[in-house]
Length: 342
Image (tube, rainbow, N blue to C red; front, side, top):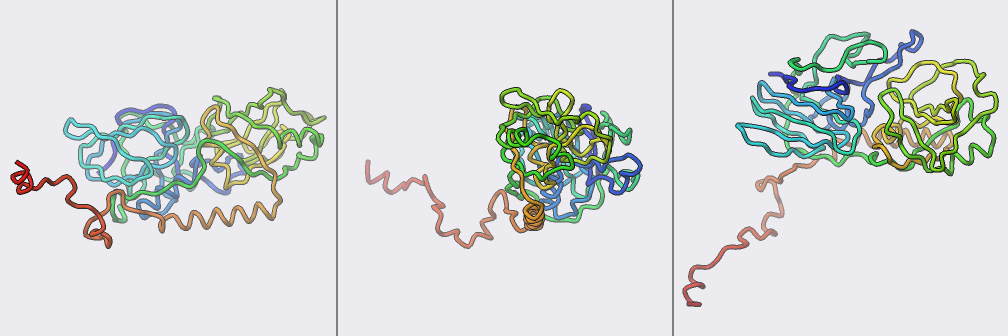
């Protein structure tokens, strides 16, 4: 069994947890822009979060299943419909589903963001530098093409129609940051203004980074910032470009840069930035390194708890201990009562 790509676009790629250990060669880790969605999809299907999945970066796609297949839909909520025998029905998000042979799955963006289609068993393609993910900025892999066949690995087995409430990270909000190597290069007044500013996520952005628009349009500047020597940068760094605009670097960012960095987003909060739709409000709160380590530990525990938070989308009456507490005959009319009334 497999998934046949019926429609695709440049933002539809294969992604996994990315490539570790290649920074010295100029290759950033890459991988899924929202790794939390990988973990949620894996929990819904009872498998490893390290398997390759389909990432849709605010881009539509359509697939056909050549055989029965379990899938999970996670990340930014797209509109999902399943077409079978000429009939269409909607599919719920953050849920596992059983696709019958020949069914067609259509996914189209809602408010924006990164959505993930995870087939049971992951998608098996040749490893490149230890991963299956496309890294378009580095020329590794490519967008999915119409007619391409995606072969899943072995299904570990398990139920479908399971639901998981996603970890909170959609719609913008407060993001925790730590000081960067250049935070002290910015005047105190500018750092304080950065703390107080409510930014809006710009429509311009991709897997390399997103642009932030200050509320009053005033940029930021570090004296002598443009003379800083290039050095290692990483996802989460907030660079201030020459015109004073902040950019938050994401998973496919470059490995070196010379723009001053006013702060660095904690890895556990970076998915919130990646999944913020255009126009969403984002604020940044500086935390200490100890607070940052504690936040990362809390995040790891939340990911570890995902499987324990699954629930069936439709409850099985045979497994309902409180079945008799429900009105199972509502709407039934007594024929005898009707006769007496007449």
